[in-house]
Length: 113
Length: 223
Image (cartoon, rainbow over all chains, first blue to last red; front, top):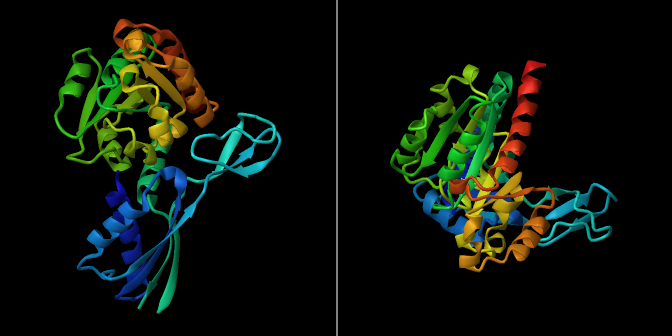
């Protein structure tokens, strides 16, 4: 998996935001991850620890929010959450569905001093 | 302590460069296919079969992504097709800046189709937009019909699925019905093309589909 690369992206954006705000220490990094990315929390945590060492985010905490998969049926308009495998509409059985949540990979905010 | 809102996709930089690649492809009317599969599933054989089926109609180039070596690019070039090798140096997938560097050495004005052969991997390539028009994945029969359960992500984000080496189905006890069922529930709209690339079996349906997609991009660029 490429959690290391993902985490480097998170930290690059965090460092940039902190520096732009004139801050020198990051204490918290908040991210939102869609479950369908299959990103694993322990792997992301491991990458966070490894990559923050000797940086302005050393000792910072990582807060992860996971979002479950959600789709809207393009035939009947029903919106529903579902597992990782079955996307078909539970109301009308249509296959014409649109995923509206579950593939996020987003950095939300940081706390810095 | 101050909270600073960022609200940005983590792969923002990759996605922005990919979007620039995409706009360039559209402007030049070049259809770009990102082909993903495990090592040994038959990516290069499928590309060669696709070239054989479409080279009379379209001008084709190939971008080869591998961790190391240039054996794949050499195989493609031996067929008189321009090929650029990208070595990722250990990275498990291609990113959009690598594609940008590769297309800088290709003559886009003289191409209709670029096939990107991604690094052999069913996990990582699926998260990275390169600017392509379609991501298509190949699974090969010897890998087993249960792979969609184990790697659902790649089956969901692919526009179409190619099942390769179908001539070996009886040897490997591949449950075709179960495979079709789970692929359909993961990605209800994706067509599944069943081929034996090295024998040319089933390749026409796939190249017909691809030709339609190429025409869409060409006609938009001409309009």
